[in-house]
Length: 313
Image 1 (cartoon, rainbow, N blue to C red):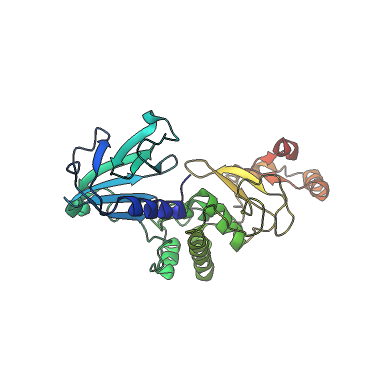
Image 2: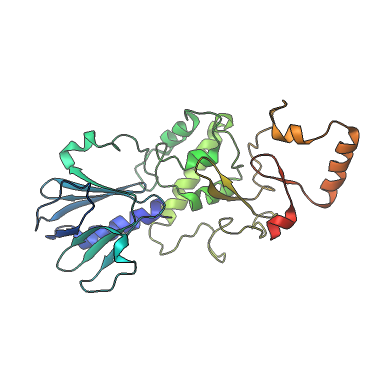
């Protein structure tokens, strides 16, 4: 999945290949009813979060949003494409390059001077890859999130708060700050929100010039928790766990042993699944206490106990 650093590097490559050169659009989806004139030159390539915009000198702008599946490729004329042709959404050709947008869910065009009328105008937060971004403003937007019960794991992926964080960086940022992914944004201290945002900006910007994605230098794979389910935590030697999280059930990796900052307390009412699953008889408490001495209890997001043997499998 492309994240802010990937989009930044993609835009830089497109800028180098296309800007100032006459071009022609040889493939566009049906909804792009405005297209640049044949031979018009690309004037600008802009990026923000997971969005890329290409603007021609006749005022036509192309907007693409990568989401989970999209990507831009650059090829020399006649070079074989690395993806199937039927996955191409938009193709721009110059004398020296062929730029192909594959599988982007959002591809549309508009007049650049009509950007204020574009449906995405004003809905994106500040771009963390941009060194001019006010990080304290980003922290304020986290703390002022419309749903204070939302988890920080959900909020980090909301591009309306700030742009550039995808699933890999979400997991790595929370690990680096030792914050529980279940922490409610309404419970965060201002200093914690600032720390999270500053860590996010540092990790994203450190990867703008790297070919790969590295959050922990010198470690095989370059990451602390993402994709390391069942392996030892680099910091505390606990076991990295994985679960699906949030409205879109994105995979989340974290270490429950050391990511304990702002872990939410269980609600003391019958609606809490953890409360419901514990029998009131004293024997039940003794059983759980004895069990915890030998093998830790792992709960999923619904509060049900996960068998460690299932995790290992």
